[in-house]
Length: 504
Image 1 (cartoon, rainbow, N blue to C red):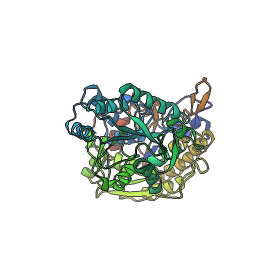
Image 2 (image 1 turned 90 degrees about the vertical axis):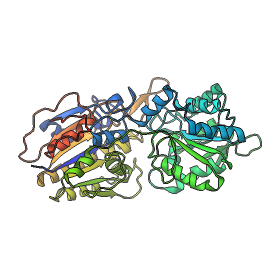
Image 3 (image 1 turned 180 degrees about the vertical axis):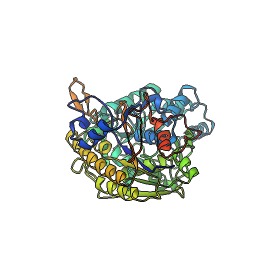
Image 4 (image 1 turned 90 degrees about the horizontal axis):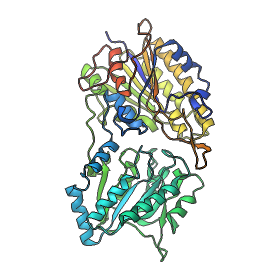
């Protein structure tokens, strides 16, 4: 017999001992504390090789939700890129090699666009060395680097250091120079604000925007941190932008993660379409424009969504706009198809100043989850509470404490609605974040940090009324165990593609 339930992802909910910089333990969370004391709780590995990332790499929302949905670790795009570099596949890539040969023959330029940090959530500046080496090996003499500054996956205020690292790599390889600098707030917008993407695109394509004579000067002038460095074109001795995109040039997007760069990719390529520009991406993107990729992606099919569809079990997906793709596209194995047994409920609200409004729109998310839970034909509600992660990324400890407290209130309401409807609830984090909000600065003093961590994430299983569960959960679990656990609670076996196990 199938017992309906709720799968509730608390984004950025990591586990670490109480500390001054642990926003989660410093917050007042009576609902979560009571659930952890009363019901089975465990701690899952959500980073590194356990989820398909390179060893020691912090987890992230994309791989976290994919592994939660797939029921198995998936070789992540960054790992696949790393392998392609190690085994020489990038240097032997025939089609891209032909593009580079044409650029060398016609004296056209290659434009490399990407996040310049080693946060390894969206990109790795270390990949730039191989990309420049590949271009140099094909005698491409002009390579322009369009640098996107971070300040989120790595500490704020580090942009200048990373830009100097880029310049050092280019000098070592013998090709490449920075042409534009801009913050990820513009170049990697995911709110749907096309004006931000267009400002980034115009700087890259035409040199429109602020002007600076050096990358250092471009990044150092930001009053709002590395995330919001104004799109800036570097100029030569003649005062003109050094690297606008010209007819016949080629563009290479160097982020390995698609979701935050694809809006810029579409905007830029549509803008330069009359210029006959050739475009490539380092990994596979989900763009309107077809962009060939240097490295493919892992097959994530056969997961939770496919099993729900196979058994005819209806699910409702709920999240704020910032995380809505994660409970649909990523949980579904990077499948954009909306299945007949799925309902999608994106929660849109006012654009949030996350520090000023750490509650975001969590009350509306809780409303939607409660409404879906009350419907007997819905077997599973899958929801994401974004606050801990999204506010945590600001690096503001006080705001993140408040975000955690708002999350606790929402959890209390959702669990009450689930109990009233005869549902079980699985609460789980997707990666660490808010449990460690400082990093040592250059002098060893703690500095605010809004990035992810390698810490485990909690999982709590709250039974439906009358449901008997073991007092403890299986040890040494990972995020890959969530889908088999959810299916077991629904009275269904794990899918044949799943290597995870039930935690019960």
